[in-house]
Length: 333
Image (tube, rainbow, N blue to C red):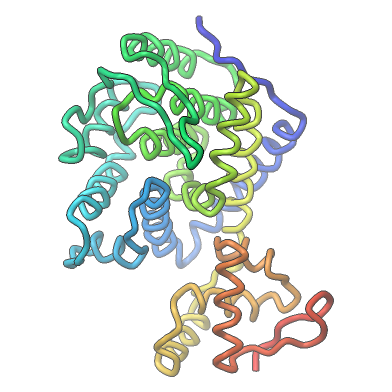
C-alpha cells in the first residue's frame, strides 16, 4: 500500500491530546440552548471563508441572504459559487469521506456551471501561482487517477489517527491538484468530512474560517511541506488551527435569555453596531480581564478585526479603558 511521506512531531502529538480534550467540551457547547443558531452561523462562516480564500468577495451577510433565499446584487459567478457551496455542504451527511466516487460527486456540485469538467479529474496540466510566479507544478494529468486511488486506499486502511489522516489527505490532495479548478474548497471540505469520522461535531466547526484568518500561514505551511518533501509542517499548522478553533468556541453562551435582551436593546439604540461588534462587547462583559488575543479567540476573529470593533465600541462610549494598554482592562460604561 502506498504511504504518503509525513512525520509526526512532538507538537503534533501534544495537539492531538489537546484536541481530543476540547472535542467533548465543544460537543456540550453545541447542545446548549443556542446550539442551532451556532450551527447556522458556523455554516455561513464556513462557506464564506472557504470561498473568500479563492477570491470570492461576497460578505458573510450576503452568504446569509442567499441561504435565506433573498436576492443579492453581485457578480453571477460569485453568487453561483455560494449556491453551489450551500448545496454541497447540505450533502455532508450523505458523503462518505473514504469513497473516491463521493469526492467526484461533491466536486460536480461544488463546481456546477463554473467549469466544463465538474466532477471529473483534469485532462491537462495545472500549476499554483503566487505573487512571485509559479509556486507548485502539479503532477501530469495522466497520473492523477492512479495518485487519487492510492491516496484513498491509504486513507481508508491506514491505522494513523484520523486527525493526522485528515491533514495528510488535505496536503496530498492539494499537491496532486486533481481538478482543473475548485481544488482548495474541495480539499477543505474533505478534511472536514474525514474529521467527521472522528466526531460528528466537525460538520459544524468552521475550520475554514481559521484558515481564512491565517491564509498566508496556510500557504506557507503547504510550501514548507513541499520543500521538506513530506507533510509534517502542514500537519502541525492544521492541528494548531483545529485546536484554536475548538478552544475559541468553548466560551459561555453569548446569547442566553439575558444576552438576547441586551442584544435587542443594543440594536435598538445603536443600529450601526454589527453582530460581531456586539459579540466582542459580550465577551468583554463576561471576561473583564481578557486581552485582544483572548477576545479574538472567543469570537473567532483576527486580532486586527477585534481591534476595529473595540475602537467602534469605544467611539460609541460603550466601553472605557482602565489602566495602561499593557496591564489595564476594558470596562463597560
